Length: 260
Image 1 (spheres, one colour):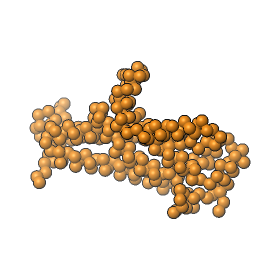
Image 2 (cartoon, helix red, strand yellow):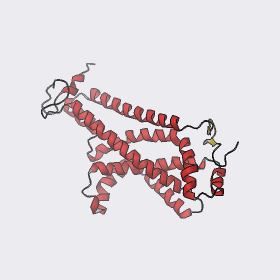
Image 3 (cartoon, one colour):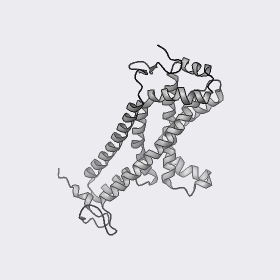
Image 4 (cartoon, one colour):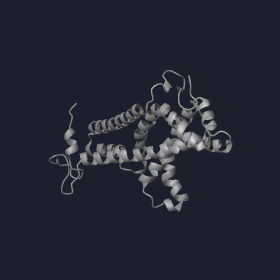
């Protein structure tokens, strides 16, 4: 097979090679286009991940509130709704249906709607991880916090959530990597991210192998980067002896009301 990596140095309009592979004087090469698409992919992914972490933490916490069955049901309904509807369907709903129902959103760029759709979809998965992390803690942690006079908010803020997050960082890493992969659905509503670039560029150049290999490499780099960042966070937050390796769901000792 003959590789033609020079395809990335071609002008997107006249297919003529451009010196240095980067456009100048108004010209745009396929390399320029691919890097721009990568930027959109990273932006969509990081903003959606931020929304997912904030909402997921709130919803996951609400699902563990004792003595508030209505709040727990609402949290469960959120998770079931956004987790059980395919992501592509949700993106189309956000792009075509929601603006029709909420006129204020008609002028919102598709990019923003995709971020919201992907963020809400992922928040349901994050909420499940946070709930599992909190419920993996010994009940004595909650009771000891109450015995110290902490309010429920303070108990979660200073005792339960810090320990729960240390337990769920590994699965949250997988969710963060999935966000980058799931961002590819943005092509369905014409957001100029990597997948759309690959589809259009291979049609124009007939060099699909080179195009898709380069795009795949960028997805791998993105996922690996977020994996390393999460690994660094996990290492910095690790408390020796807090989580016992091999225990089901994470066996926690120490902290408020801990003990062995």
